[in-house]
Image (cartoon, rainbow, N blue to C red):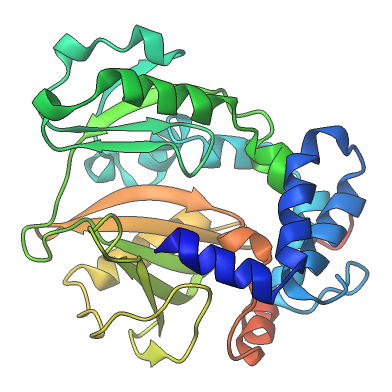
Length: 305
């Protein structure tokens, strides 16, 4: 379904074909500013305003180029972030790590439980969910993980925090919420300790389904925002731990101009998922567009580049 949709979009919006070509040439392009501004135009059809950024996406692109806090590298590393987050909100919110390896060839399969999750630590696509190890194609899994480890998230997006993240593979405890029958993401847009909005990601990984995003304000009132993904057929119910997650997101974003703080709720307990600085890469339009300006108004950028 995604392949068909992507083909239709590419035909309808030829700029997306050029964007794909640009991505393939990313390693040979050294001018970060040119790359970021060109990529932004190809995806949005608009000129990027870096001198006086106003929208959410403009400010995220500004941060790619000029806000290079070394702490961000730790915060986006899926392994190192666990210790960082635990130091702020405690170990109870951290999904247990079963193993960590520099190469997929070193994975000790015999020591892993029947259910687990494999992740690469430096990107967003290197995830393998194993519900029954007996049915796992280990050769295919190793092949996928090796391919993901080669991917350079920094080069293709110029998202600076990923530039120096060590490339590793981790295994985590498998989790699933009994009530929803899945592992929903609750993603909080947080601005220097203040949560302004969030969205719920559901149906991820379900056979025959595309992932759905529903946006809400800080009081869980549904917002008429669309970005790439459709809304759910029904509005997801407010999670029982909503206020707890909001409080934790506030703590984890304190002192940071903006960061998206993601959690899971599993059988009434909150678990940390990840920290993300560039929601949708800072290149996916908001519908309606006014929300791009509203979200942008919540970001207070550093005074100097």
